[in-house]
Length: 115
Image (cartoon, rainbow, N blue to C red; front, side, top):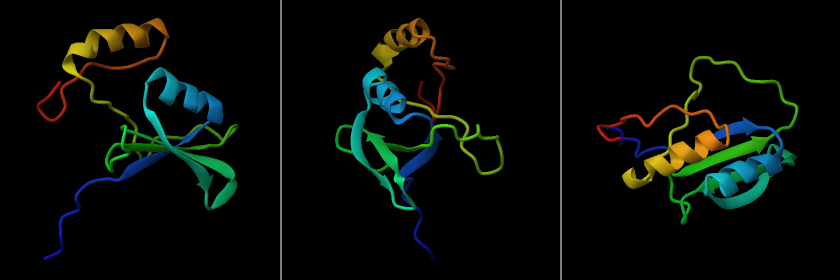
């Protein structure tokens, strides 16, 4: 019997300007820029890796910044939602921070029997 897949190492998305991406994910959200490298299929493009403080598998969100790329369309097999887990006692901080800076969000919501 094949072994069960233990989880996802990372998810990659297409982004716009690299500095705006770093400003939002590292500076605004506080994620750690774990690794800054190049897209090996397109060495002129950065590959930005964000994650927890140690870059554990399953915490990694990566981006290929392609300024001017056409906006994607929702389709089969495409991730359409990004969710973050935060300490329960920080919910009001994040709701206020996101709202104050005009960042649209949904939540807080329950996932996997947790808020």
